[in-house]
Structures are given as C-alpha cells and as structure tokens.
Image (cartoon, rainbow, N blue to C red; front, top):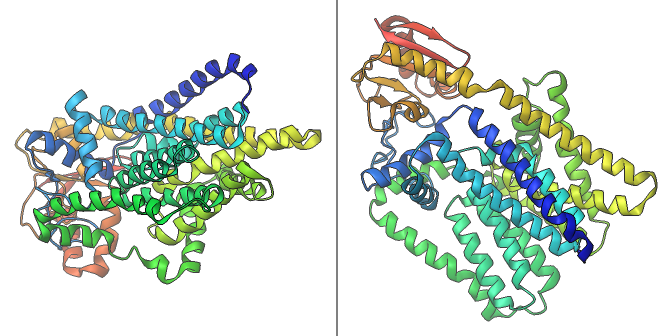
Length: 497
C-alpha cells in the first residue's frame, strides 16, 4: 500500500506537480495563436448567452473550406456539427467569468487538472504506491499533447477528463457496489460522448478493468444500468435535433461522413495511426529538423513501457493492456488521425512509463538507473519542446501584429473576410465573415481579405480539383481585384483596389 511514511512528502509533491502543470499549460495558453477550431466552439457558446441561440454567427453557410458551396443549413442559428455539451459547458463558464480567449482556455486548463488528478488516483489504486502516482502526474503535466489540449479551446480536454474520471470512478466504486460503479462510470462516459464522440473510447479501459476484476460478478440487471445514461443523453440530444432536423442532416452528417473508414479496413487504419497521427502530424512531421526530430523518441518510449508492463502482474499489467487496447480501438474507430486527439491516449501511456520506471527502480542493479534515465530524458524532451513553443510566442509575434495592422486600415464598418479566429479580436457579431470562397457563392464583396496559411491557404490548394470556377475566382480576386498590403509568417492581408 501507499504507506504512512509517504504522507510527509505527498502533500508538497502534489502541490509541486500542480504548479508544474499550471505553469506549462498557462504559458502555452498565453502564447499560442488562436485558430479556427477554437472559434468553432467558442462562437456558439457565446451566442447562447448573447442571443439565446447556439449558432456559428461569424460563418458564411456556403463558405466552409472543407465543403465549399455546400450550404451548412442554419449554421448561424443552430450548430449541429459538434456535440451540444461542448458548447453548453463553455456558455456556462462565459456567463460566470466573461468571454475572452484566455478565459476560454482557462476553462480547459481546469478540466486538465481534473484529468491529472483522475489519472493519479487510477495509478495509486492499481499500484498502491505514491512514487509511481506522482511520477505519472509529472509525466502527464509535461506531456506535449496533454498540455496543448489543455491550452486549446477545443472540447478535447473536457471529453478526455470525463473519460479519465469514468475510469477512476469505476475503480473507486466497483468493490463496494458494482451497480453504482457501472452506472456512475457510464454516466460520465455519456457526458464525455455528448461533449465529443471520441471521449467514449475511454470505455475500452473501463472494460479492461471490468473483465479483470468483476466479470464473474456481472449480472444482466447490472449491465442494463450502463444503457440508462446513454438513453437519457440521446433522448435529450434528439429533442435538440428535432428543432431543426434539416440543419442536423447537413451539418452533422457531412462532418461525420467518411469517419467509418477504419471499420472497413482496420489494418490500414492501424498503419495510418502510426504513420499519420504519431509520425507525420505530431512527433516527426516533414518540416522537423535538428533536435526537433528527437521528439520521435517520445511515442517509442511510451509504447516500449506499455508493452513491458504486459509481462508484469496485477495493476501494472492492466495499465499495459488498457494502453494497447486503447491504441487499437482508437486507431480503428478514429479515422481523421488529427494530433489533438492524442490527449485521449498519452496520459495512459505516461502512466505506463511511470509504473514501468518504478518497477525497474525497485528491481535494483543497472536497470533502475537505465529506467530512471529514460524517464528523465522523456520529461526533459517534452519540457524543452513546450518551452520552445512558448518562446516562439505566435500569439504576440504573428496574431497580434496582423490584427493591429488591420485595426489601422479597416474602419468599424469595413467588411472583412477572414478565418473565424479573427472573431477573438473583432468580435463574432460585427463586421467579420468567415468565408473561404471569398464571396463566390454568397455574392458578398469585402473591403479586406485576411488569408491565413493553415486555414484559407490550405483550402485554396484543393479548389482547382473541387471547383475550377471557384479556383479561378479566388485567384482573380486576390491578384487583380485586391492588392496585398501586409505579409506575415501566417497572415496575408489584402485590400480592395
């Protein structure tokens, strides 16, 4: 067990790790540039407390970069491209503390703190020792994927935190009351699902625990409890959908389209999981040079530790099994391979590394120093990666200068077309429209156009094959009808001639 002697240093260690987490997450939140996905969740939440509807008010319905010319029906009044709790939760937060980009991110940092505590509880319960518990928390608090999710306005951290809390709740309750463990854990997973569908994949870890500890005790009556929260959740969601079924079909249907590819080709999906998500998108992207390429060691170390735990006993083995089951279920069921979903995987992997290090340390000899060295290298590598990203400070170096320049050039009634992240500066109900087709379908003619490299710039690349007429219009608009007046690392600003 944890031992009474550890109580003397448990408190200071816990507060120290919390401070590390708040420092890394806070610094990241203060320095990262806002982006359109944050606006896609902040705008509907702000609209809910402003107009009483839940719309993406800044968006032109025919101007989505992923589906140009396809009308996102009533998107300015009701958003269905995302699950409702992501927006409702933020709306409550904005009602309490007010709206702003950093207050938005603080909301997710607090969810990250809940996730951190949940994983610490999970490790303590499975190992009975404070050392791997605090080491797990430290590795998570310096994990790049975890910190990026915490400092991001997307709902990934909220969903991941609810999933980790579901696992912790099951562990806390299953011995005393299995029915309560099932009901509470599934209720938390249902809330995670209606925050973001990917959150329900934490079910795989709950199933691993249930199979290990309780499968002989399970009864059909208890299993029926698992369905209750989801029945209630889908019923409430259905009521919201019934307000505008056509909008739901166009928005949610198109956003979910094509995401079942992993089920049709699971082996290919697993290969893409490694190649696309872990390598190209996160740990060894094509643009990486120099020391940055060393970050590929992070997933290698993580999965080495997870596999090593398969040869241990009891709680440590369960962590390894849960990590590998989560990897395969995640790889098959999540087909976009976006790096921001890694927050659903890396905390469990961080726990595997910490527990493996603790076991090797207890084994003594040279192995203990080798394991400690590996863990230290990973923490140092991730911490340096986070520090370098904060030092670059794209919020101050890229976003603010472009917005300040536009402030000088554009009047309050000037129509600006630009990505929705401009709403964090100019507001979501004013003179900015997010229309990646630059008015091709809507007929609106802006005074200024702001092209961001990661949003509009990427969308423009696909127009030649999607719609040659749109491609010609965009080229003519930018090269003939407008003149370039500002060029930055990310943003290029054009003014009508």
